[in-house]
Image (cartoon, rainbow, N blue to C red; front, side, top):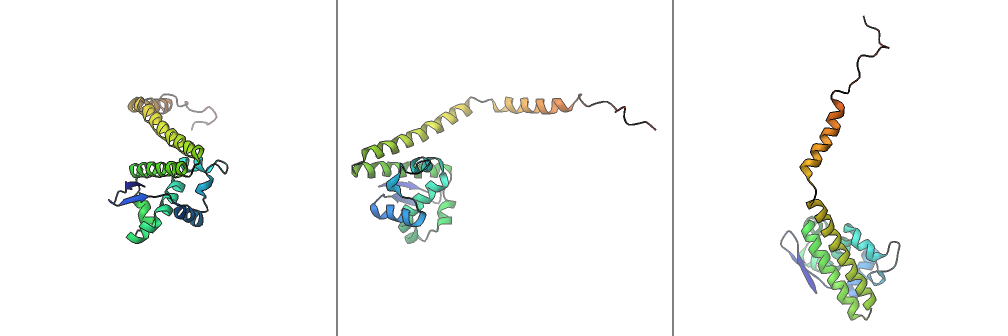
Length: 163
């Protein structure tokens, strides 16, 4: 079981069991036992669709949320970017463990690879952003836009007769 804490200070325990897998299927129509199914595969959709991922996590946590009197909307309101990353990490670690213990190591490896790809993609974006001179890029954009506006306006049109 893996845990994360939302921005309201509530600690949630992600526990992937047959019961939680059935709950996700019944509430969302998402079968976590078929991660490689679909186009794109469910595993890819979970890695790229943050709303789907958070809905799946909430369905897993629903008994805890019900016991705490936390609605889906309240749960979502307490999920900022950093919390989503922590919840995602807890979910993937639980997913890997679930499939490894189920004897489906190929699915566990695929889930580990997906988690690694997400980490690498975030790191790559951060690296690119760190290398961008934002002030310089904004200055260039203004120069291109404002430079084309100044000094390039056409003179009086010959087709308009003067009075």
